[in-house]
Length: 171
Image 1 (spheres, rainbow, N blue to C red):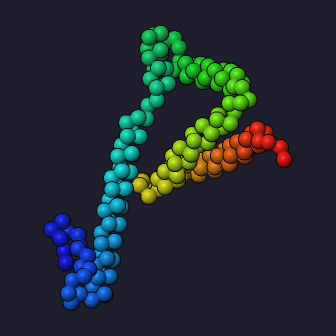
Image 2 (cartoon, helix red, strand yellow):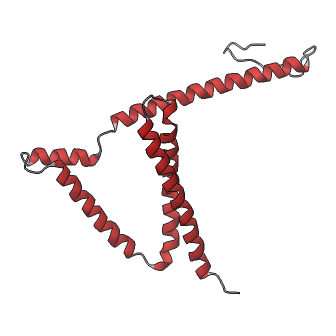
Image 3 (cartoon, rainbow, N blue to C red):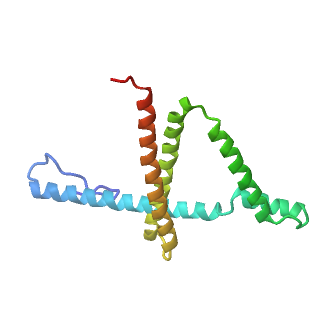
């Protein structure tokens, strides 16, 4: 039996309906659900691709172009972006080395959480071939990112385990 929306209504407990018909109806329901899920996934992939194209220019690019314009072309945007990177390295160095040993375990947990987000992005990059043509570089970088993030997560769990073992009672 078909419903008005185009799907199939499962005919259970109906008089005179055999098990084969009920199983056929269940298979049609499953196939229709799979088609709908594939359509939703395709729409989500198209929306993600559109968002990626819209957000292609980063804040550093915008800031570099702004400084280049304001200085009358005297400062190259690359120099400004390099300065931002160097400042970020310095701040990161002082932040990481000023963490007390008691906070290293929670810090590693946060690092593992960030790496799990990287894994999701890497999996999306590896699967990008199903959405667009000519994305070999994206798949390659996605695979490398997936491997590096997996190593980072595994190492984070090892370090966290060792740190927690330092604080456990000795037997």
